[in-house]
Length: 234
Image (cartoon, rainbow, N blue to C red):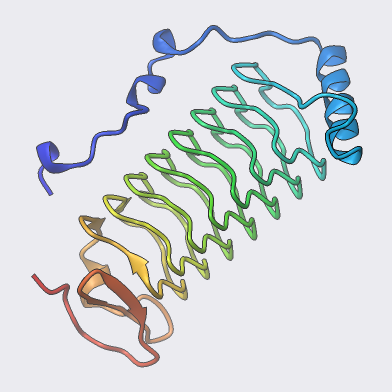
């Protein structure tokens, strides 16, 4: 695919810090108070407390392990190196957030909005991202080993050198996504939508792992139980 034909991210400007919204600086007490209010908001089914709004906040290195953060607003937030291990982030707004080197192992991000987010070198082992919106997300060197990404929308996402071993990608939208040098051994790509794509050549002509290879049939990918040597059809 030539560069002019490659999908252009509507979030590209977010990579330019000068174009981003001003970063909000919050004291530890302010952050803790907002988290308490958010917990009350969820526990009372939205009758008390307030939904936490960390939009554009700098939460670099902050620890959120195991917290219930469903529906939280963290769009454009700086979350570099933050710890969200086993956190509940269903339907969270993380659009354009900076999550470089963040830890989200075993976190539940089902239905979360991560379009344009920066997840470079983040760890999401065994995380659940079912039906999440991740269009044009930057995910180079991300670790998604054994993660659930069924029905995720990763169209236009950048996943070069990503680790997707054992990942569930059934019915995922991968159109225009880049997977150069990515590891996809034992991943489940049944009924995934590819369209225009950027794959490493070995994916088309050699088994990935344990004698398996992925074979293209139109725009659908299927996992073959035995080795099949098949290049993508024109």
